[in-house]
Length: 234
Ligand code: HPA
Image 1: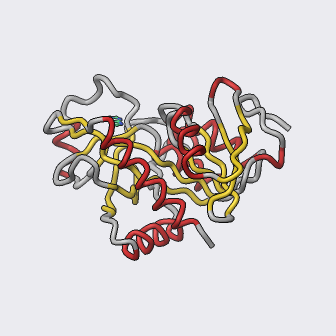
Image 2: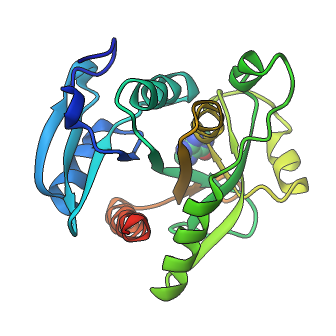
């Protein structure tokens, strides 16, 4: 079986999928974390791998950037491959009292995208994380003494430009991260009936014009991946 965007064989994708934005990040994560990892998708270079983490079968697939790309993969993974859990592991810009390298769990995702409204008759959908996945991630972080911030994020369609007052609006609503996918992932999950979560590393800060250096970025993403994988274990 294949879809317009995934050329994997039907049984080659696990029912749990980690979804980084960058397909090369997916390859790196598979090499670092998966036993017996096999490449399962190369269509459009959106690399995907399936293997085992401590005995749990898991796939890691790139989502691309932005809600439309992420929503295409999430929808096909759920509808065609029967995926039951999708965790986005990405980066975000920090807002307010959050530091570079911090881990942020996106409890809910506001957005300037029209994607969820198109699916929901023009109404505003409260795009939120799956409670079970959120609780497991929070419990695992506490057990491992890893600091994990739980807050709202904002999924924007505009990496450049957009609302010039956005930062002030985000601060006024205690939103702590800006990225480009979570509201779409959560909306698709609510509609398709799978569990979804986004865990993000703060890679830059909107107010301080600060950016994580590459080695710190690498370590932060590894720490986040380990936490997410551990939280998904039975
Ligand atoms: N904006 C949007 N997406 C992002 C950012 C940002 O500042 N940082 C990482 N992903």
